[in-house]
Length: 121
Length: 462
Image (tube, rainbow over all chains, first blue to last red; front, side, top):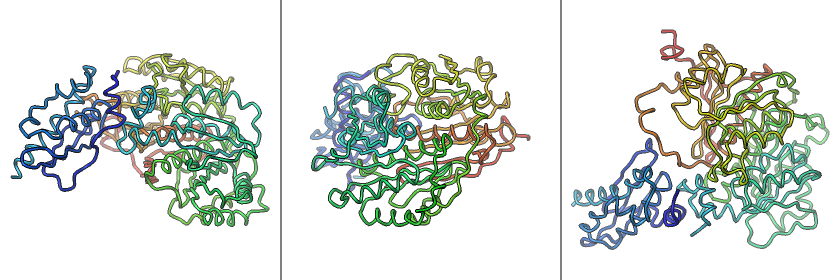
């Protein structure tokens, strides 16, 4: 069902964890759907200097969480807001149709974290 | 990649648990167990789960290993990642830095003798954690000994029972359920130690499967005395030979429920499942194997169970249960055991068993938790009394890849088999109007009382 990139990110997700003094936090998904992700960001200037994720869910969701942190770290806030669900799925080399919903939580959570940061300012 | 593609698919349900992930599964694959037991047939379930979980090396110290090749073949077929070998006295050397755990599984007499032997052969030179999986009738005790001091304390309590051989006697089949239960708890203990997760059972866990009672707060010494001084009463299992039990779902719960009932001589076993064997099943569905991937699960189960007990009459239904077929399927059986993995089917089954007035034993497992209850129509609560149906339950199909630790559904399946046997033999105290809640990492085990709901949409009288 999954390609090598997805299996890699699923079994060895990057940047897993929390940032205790995060500048922004964003979540998406819910436990009853089976997938939930929280993204923590650290911002310097207007650049994302650190991004961490905590994912509870299926292989697609975990892989998407891992991949979105890689896509986001080092990017400016505006650039990061352009990271889309489709972009994450593409970076993962594609996902089965029925799994796209699961992976969509990742980009959404990232955007929510950035909105949270902006609100706090 | 941290693991091979096949491994990632095989252990998917472990890797999906954030606290385990690929790193944790790698640790499990790098771990070793030395498994001491007297009767490997009785203790085999633990070996199946060690293999399914991916414990890389299993060294077996059996009192009598004759005929064990069949088991060894099955274990390799279940999981070729795992290396299983017999260990002779002389070969008791392990490489430095290898993380090794000892599991001692058996009746009190065997455990005592083995522990004394381990101390004599210089335990202090190569101390490894020792997990005791001790069973006596319907009762038992599991404890993880992590130091010489613990070990000596344990042995000193057992020394008081030098002459009480009747307590240690061979009880035949009715001891099996207890052996399966404590064996699975021991496997979980090994996984907890390997992953450094949860709380090891440094204080003993005492259990009584007949009353479904647990004690993990009294001192280990008190619990040990309790187990060793309980007079064991043999349970007459002859009613099983004429009994007909139906198991719905040949997966994680169904595997051990079927295994236990077959091993104990159930007359007829019905098996229902629409699905085929997949590699991601094999971290926990020990009825199936690598060579049977792609086969209908009921067919795979039949092959496995015939090996466990060729005399059991097996009736298979390669189908999903639906409102349109469930009444017919359950009609000829005495007891129904639920091994389902979704809510809508649970309601269908509950309602059908209520209408037909058939006892239903229900369980579930997810992540590191399990739940079980026994439903006797009108006498006790039904599934809807506990979990009334709401709009949410049925609307969103949940993603079916959330994690589950292999032995957890296994343990709940044993609880289900125990319930069935108690109902069939009229012994013990069932989980009617009670709910067993199990968290294996914190060893939080709670049996809650729960009466019939008089407003229940199905069985309420209001």
